[in-house]
Length: 245
Image (cartoon, rainbow, N blue to C red; front, side, top):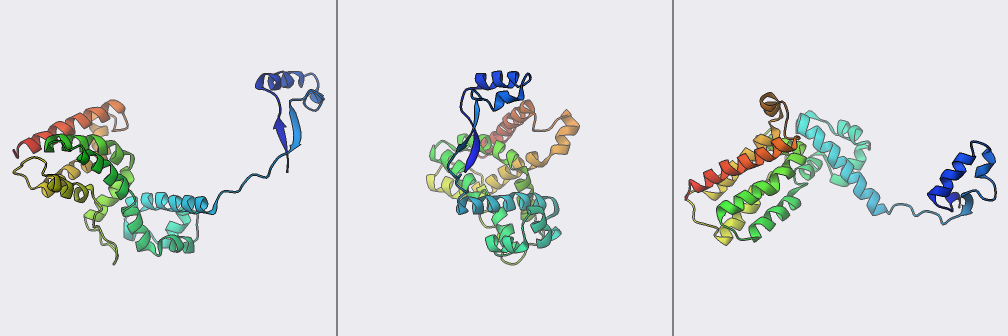
């Protein structure tokens, strides 16, 4: 195929543009920096890439809709319209509306598992582990605020479709067994309940935008407020953990 190609540096191009103010032929003369040349045909995106991009777009937009309106508050037709695809495309990728909802709920499980597993693998005591979990997950949850809102909706039991499961939708399940397996620190607390408490605290702060704006005039998007909040949460959660010693 033929295309315009710049055959000299930016300075030459700038000079040519200046000369073109005097004569438009500066861009077509023998010293012109731009030539019409034969170049190879560009490769089209691989089909796998296109499929992955479509799937990610559907998950992104479905996550926002489900988070705002809940599972029963949005139809498959509305989902397809928001995602810019036909209903058949959603069914092709996810099987059904419940299948899409399940995929959105479990979308970040592997990343959360990887983050928490890395913390647990350091084999610190319980207090150190909880502190690192707060540090590791707070920013992640803040970035995925819509997904957090969705999982809270689901956990509160908004009436899920048959076949949609909340099993292992939380990092609580991921970390609980690991802590037990590694016998991290003696504690009077029930580890499962402790971790549910920590998760609830984190989620509540992530979703409390209105409270932050009322108290501070800003929310967690402000770096100073975000860092101050993380330090506060570490102190509160560590105090809770230490009370079980």
